[in-house]
Length: 404
Ligand code: ADP
Ligand code: MG
Image (cartoon, rainbow, N blue to C red):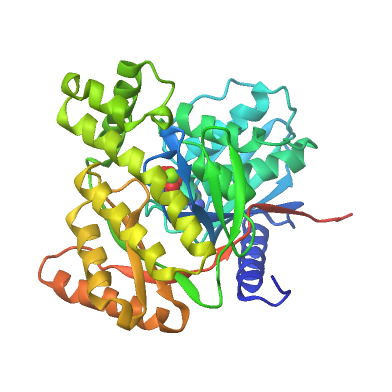
């Protein structure tokens, strides 16, 4: 990335904004700023918790966290601009989940540091963000990893290798009660600028695959819809995948083959079988997509995205009318208008779709899809969709100021 790339200037803007908001709130300059991106998953839907193959990119919207040592030892004073809410963690007391829920993403990370015996000083912390939350862009993992970055600097430690994303994942499991896979925290931590990240969730190996930025763009269209059933249904799909694995004595669905599934399918309910079918094919599609992108066979790559969406909608059954409508609308615009493929991204039942599109036609495609959706939606009293072009960006970073 060049020094004056759009991505660097977006980050610099957000960094300056969080510093100024911090100064206003706490009347001092922060000692550190920690910045973590959001992410979208290009392909590999609902396979991360099945030890599968996923292909996320970190995107250029971020959580910005500023921190300074607190005069009051043993106390963390934390404020989120988004939530317009503050809370305090007393380091002398056990850190446990509490309300409001957003604080648990922070509490869980603090807990992870303390259980490793890392001593933390008193801190003032301010959280700012340009990631729309709950839209499938993983604002939660971004928040966790950004907070972890501040605590590393404040505690004078560096969590090596996979320890930081693992700590953050555990925070999400134990404190926010979300049984997420490793994809989000790994992407937010390790992504490289301009690259897609092929992550094998079984052995946690990573291959950074250049995204052809000159010719292609990823558009993210956000429905701003989140259906009530999303959490329960996510847990139920996970449960079904585990049941299939257990029935076959497998560690995960990554080890599943078509003949194994044939053997046990009459012992399983229909949805469990079709979930397993999705996982099998989706892993194949992720690898195929990467190969097509490397070969610059864009239309074939795009076809993998459409197939992934159909499978998530029909077999895994985690889509919804709004997501299906957006993917259909992208498909209708077609190759002529520069659209190569589209699919829902994230957990489903709302959130966003991604569209792989020729770069020079990308902004027309985004406005075309969003306008059509919003025109239809006007009569349906549903939230208006919005869209943007997501530039593949790098993972989390920290800045330490030398202030006397
Ligand atoms: P996603 O990760 O796709 O954005 P999640 O439901 O997993 O959606 O996480 C969103 C939640 O993370 C929010 O509801 C909030 O609790 C927390 N969160 C994310 N960003 C912030 C922020 N800037 N300030 C406070 N809480 C945040
Ligand atoms: Mg999340």
